[in-house]
Image (tube, rainbow, N blue to C red; front, side, top):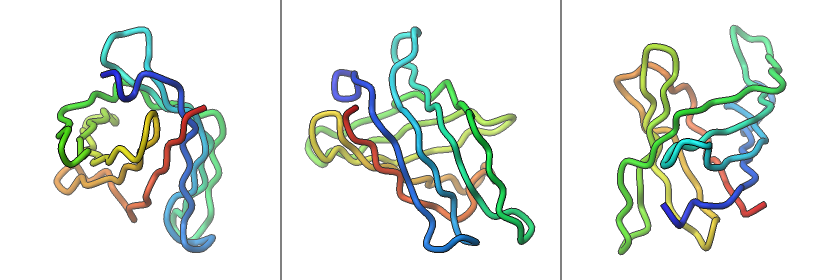
Length: 119
């Protein structure tokens, strides 16, 4: 997918310390054609305690669809035994936003908006 060919900086921030996920990392293609990965550090609330995880990775992201008229697409992400679905919108060359829209997977907590900008 030519629109997502470069390396991007991905980030999101919760509304408060005890709110949704805060994350910063890199998004880009892997060595497998059509597959993407994110390398990241994250902070999130769990059972009333803020958890921090460094040097995390999530591979196997795949673009399922992209509407060239609306710039809306979907990504899927394998996570353990489930699949999370992300909707994304192209904002410019190598620049997009995405949000978790998974409902039945049980993977999504509070949904943050993730911003990806060209690296």
